[in-house]
Length: 95
Image (cartoon, rainbow, N blue to C red):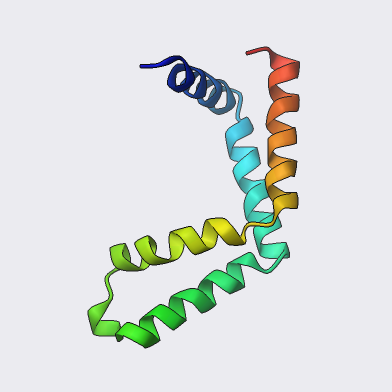
């Protein structure tokens, strides 16, 4: 493993062990619902299914098609808030 991979694994382990990962996931869910992202993703799914036909779309196909759009639609403010919270957690608990 390279240094960056080890660092990511270490941060993830610390977040998981202390329960912060779950708190961050809940915050992310709430923020995405609040900003309408969840509704936008539902609409994207409906559009893909309508375009290709229900019988021609698998869950895997749907995920592959909408994932890039979903990531692009996450507001910068949500990304920044999560990053700030992760940094604050790491500063408080050492890394």
